[in-house]
Length: 170
Image 1 (cartoon, one colour):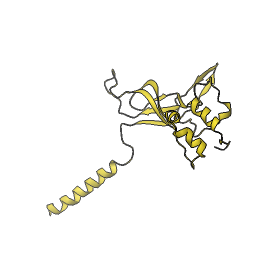
Image 2 (cartoon, one colour; image 1 turned 120 degrees about the vertical axis):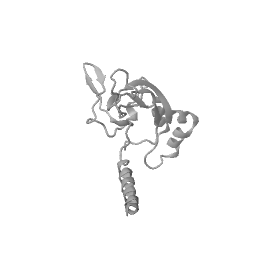
Image 3 (spheres, helix red, strand yellow; image 1 turned 30 degrees about the vertical axis):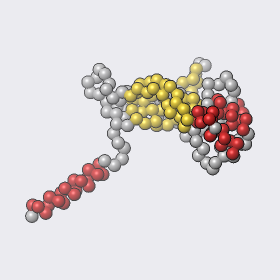
Image 4 (spheres, helix red, strand yellow; image 1 turned 90 degrees about the vertical axis):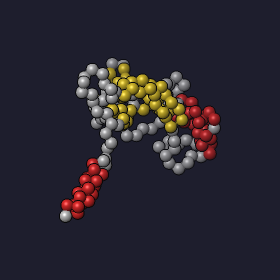
């Protein structure tokens, strides 16, 4: 009788552990959302607020100027979910960032050939897949950090305007 109960108990424990493993994996680095910058006294501030975010944005190519730092900026709110340190001095689970990898892709139907060429020629490839250096540290245990990322290069915006065929629709 004892032998019959063991397999059932083992199955129940295995089933429970399987469900305990579902969901969010502990120890993650996450980009939570795109923050909404604010301005005060002539300076731009990027908040660290998980409840305030911009879900989408529009790039108006007609106002992009050569003096701009980027045609479009993204302000990611980053979270470090690694467990916090209990010793209090050094944080062994702090995350240090060295940059952002940026990939720009079409999310709808393929664009006209003239615009596709901008994305696929040698110069365009470097404008749609690139790395931006950046530096910052995020403390463990749910620490947050906001960043500023030039997410759409001026050269790409200028090439799209030159190619034509871009309308006002998102």
